[in-house]
Length: 273
Picture 1 (cartoon, rainbow, N blue to C red):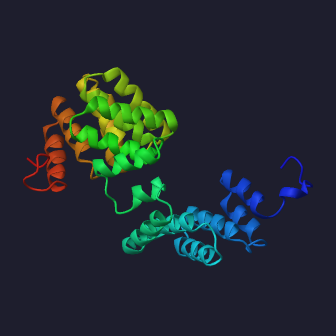
Picture 2 (tube, rainbow, N blue to C red):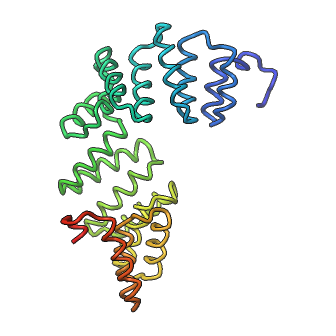
Picture 3 (cartoon, rainbow, N blue to C red):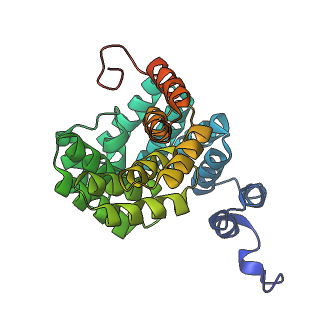
């Protein structure tokens, strides 16, 4: 951009990488058209096509890169991700397994292999890659489900330290802190989650619950309402808004919210009861 005459990166792989890193995906794809003679370039185009949702094209590029003797385990792993997004779980699992066979140190392929998020699987992934963000967050969720809130907070905090733009990590840490009664820290986390992703309905429902517990009815109602605008099936937000409506004397509105919530839950579950 500063010097259009700077020839060394005008064309080919480096130019496409630079454009892709700026989010200029169509321009990056166009830059690659004249240099699709290497497996590395095909691999990069596969990534760019995934970014645009062209999953069939991405699978084709990774397959062709494999045919041309490109990095086998990386192309298999990336093709597995494309198959996974397409809903072809059998092909995805086959690619992940072969990627692992070629390189047992591939933590990401192990994480994606079959959708398992067992404690044993997560331990293996994190042994290979202690900075694996998805595995840290997944282990945090498992610890939270088992009641180990402090351990869960540690995992979410570590994932935030590595990548500070994860709305899920901030929201999940906020949920744990709220459960521990640390409402100030919880509010700070939920605010940060919503700064990153204003459409995070779960974070809005949690912040609404926090406001309701602080007797801040109007703020709670606003968060519950916005959460339901984004996701009408958000049961926690609907139940929370019902409580706020009941508190302010809107009994009919509260009943209507609860009737809607009942429709979105399964009979016999704690949420339904």
